[in-house]
Length: 438
Ligand SMILES: Cc1cc2nc3c(=O)[nH]c(=O)nc-3n(C[C@H](O)[C@H](O)[C@H](O)COP(=O)(O)O)c2cc1C
Image (tube, rainbow, N blue to C red; front, side, top):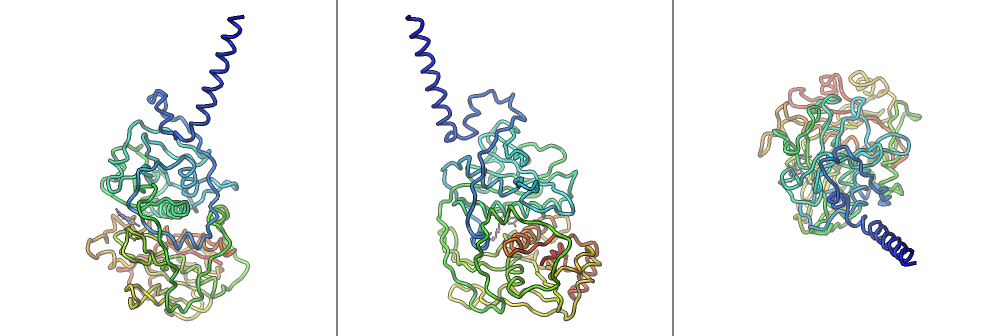
């Protein structure tokens, strides 16, 4: 009898322990759970992340809210928040594609997730793979202290520094959008020689490009809706397409049903590539500012964006004349460069199907503008600018999705031909991508 009672008590106590560990474990977070185990035997072990949150913010709103945040509180990032940001960054979709497009026909991005130990993100089963014991967050993320540091790297067997960085530009955009939409903050920080992630010790075929701290923000986002005073382009409007839907449904195509594009679509697509937000940022961390749709190293914003449609080639003047109350740009418009249909010339320098696209957006680096207070113009560090070009191209694809259109990202095999089409000197300009869309 006594033995029977003891057995019952033991069963009850065990059930209570199992219940408590299940109830408490999500709050403890992956890194704390691991303390209970012998870490040296964990290399390669996978920890499934919880399902990502559906982000119902309008895509255009999330792009207008993109800005860099550099001050983070100690509040931990929950497993669900981390899951949401990582899926947006480079997650696997229901159709088997990733949340960013291939660059030059391949995917090369690798994301390290620095918590109390180091993990790698595995998109295939949405898990964190234990990589290395040890807290490297303040070493690798020395610029800004945060509860999570994301190490953006690329596989050197698959891509070179330029195309690897371009894909990471797309990954970085998704991290910015998702983090902001769920109340977190981030900033892309890049360091080339040696990359900031070096102390972690990467495999030989991986190279570090940038670090993105991720955390709860010290200063709340504070945006005021103030579109440009004078825009000669139709106004960008908030669609019903949620951020998660845009990430799920982006699709690359090589043919289009129509040969023309409406001014409203053109306005949205070109704005998404490099335009200024309609929001003024009045958050505590900044002077009043109007952010671009992409980040830029040193805030240089050295790109020119061109639109080539059936009627000609135009340069996107995304913000002129700092004459408003805050000294911010107030005018945007398209400046004609060449009249007539030039899309077949673009096709000859890229892919034949570009000539059928209603619109080709061309992303061109103005090399002189990369040498302002610090010289970032060298060919050897051109990857810095490929990151920004990749971010701009990715924005166009997501904006196309939001408007029921499709595009592609084309590398350029004859840069001189593109420069000559745009009346640019090939010594001083570097065309990086063409994005056919319609
Ligand atoms: C490739 C790249 C590297 C960057 N490196 C750093 C960096 O090392 N530290 C930093 O604080 N910001 C860095 N930034 C962020 C820019 O400073 C920021 O995007 C720019 O000032 C515009 O501000 P916004 O992103 O808030 O609109 C980088 C941006 C890019 C695209």
